[in-house]
View 1 (cartoon, rainbow, N blue to C red):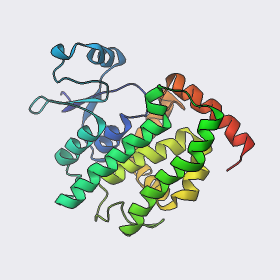
View 2: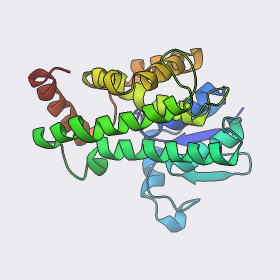
View 3: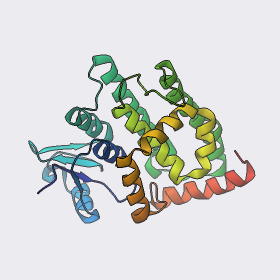
View 4: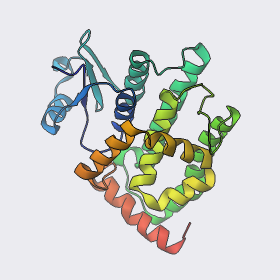
Length: 242
């Protein structure tokens, strides 16, 4: 039987990880397109694409033959379909805000998707300035909604939803794959890190992460930008233990 959804993304736990967390947590049935299919769709002329799309992730929902690109659009759509959106105008809008913030963090961490590589100076500025600011922003949002290190959700909803799972997909994956940053996360966003870990330890997400670790190892965003990031992180960790 064909899965309802197909996710088109590279075999790495980067931007496509957000959709995977939602699908796995909800117990949805989905397939992952192979790298050749992802590349073909990515490189196709917009006139030949099922929807004009720039870059993965892409999602196909066979029920209605819906195509989407852009991580926030995919996750908000899946949230509606899978019953993971809060369901009020304000909280739904705040969920979209969180998805946008997550996207911005990825852009910052990869220097606009690899337009530039990290240097010791640019990383030090980011690690002592912008990164703590992002972490504090997530932490304060949670705190205002009753989130603590032991209980609660990012937006104060009774059950975890898209915002919580997006938060976990972002921060626990960074903590897992870039362990030098774990102390920074813990120092500036302890409640966010704890929430992310609670969700990551649920059976469906724990199984997903274990499978990815077996297949992909320590890969995060891959390519030259990951090599640049790991190189500068190694020097930064050795010179300024966090």
